[in-house]
Length: 87
Length: 188
Image (cartoon, rainbow over all chains, first blue to last red; front, side, top):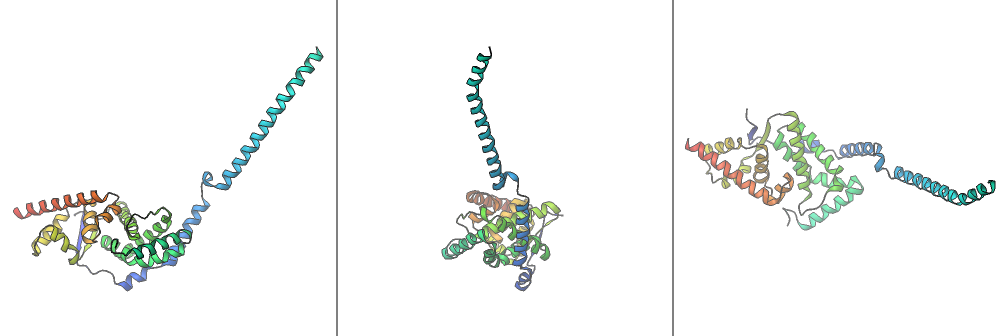
C-alpha cells in the first residue's frame, strides 16, 4: 500500500453540510472549560497573590532580623559594663 | 492587496483579533469567515466528514487559545489557521498511522501540469499522480499548499515553518524530482 491515497474529482461536502457542523457556542463552551481549568491549576509561581504573600513574609522576616541585630549591638556595651562591675 | 485581501479587510481582521483577546465572543467574525475554508482544507487531507469536523473545531479552539501569541506578519489570519490545521492533520496521521488521503480536483492539478510541462493526455496525468506517491510527507505538503491550495511561497513558508526562500527552493527541487520520475517512467 502506498503512502498516500490520491482521490481525483471526488465530490466534496456541500455548503449546507459544512454549515451544519459550524457551532460557535460549542467552541466558546470548550474554550471556557479549558481556560477555567487552566486558571484553576495555575502554578503557584505564576500566581501574583501567592508571590505577593511570599514577598510580605520575606520583608517581615528581614525587618525582625534587622531589629534583632540592632538590639544585640546596642545591648553589648551594657553587657560589657555589667561584667566589669561584677569583677 | 495582500494575498487576495484588501488592506481594509486585513485591518478589520486585526481589529477582530484584538477584540477577541479581551473577549472571545468577537472571535465569531473570524470563525464565520474562515470555517468553510478550513473545513475544506482539512477535508482534502482526510476524506472523512466527521473527522474533518472534529479537527476543524480543534483548529479554531487552538487558534482562540493562542490568539494572544499571534503576530501579524503581512499575511491574513487564515495563514495562522492553516498552520494550525496542517499541524493537527499531521498529528492525527502520526497517532493513527493510517494512509493519508489527498482529494484533488481537475482544476487543482492544472498548474502543476503546466509546471511539469505535461500535455493533457490521461496517461501523463495518471503518471504524474503515480509519481507523486514517491514524495515524502513534507514534499507532498509543499506541493499541496502551493499547487492545490494556490498558496503564495510566503504562505507556504509560514504554514510549514520555513522561510519564503526555502519554500521556493524546495518547491523547485520537488518539481525536478517529479520530472525525473516521469522521464524514467516514460523512457522505460
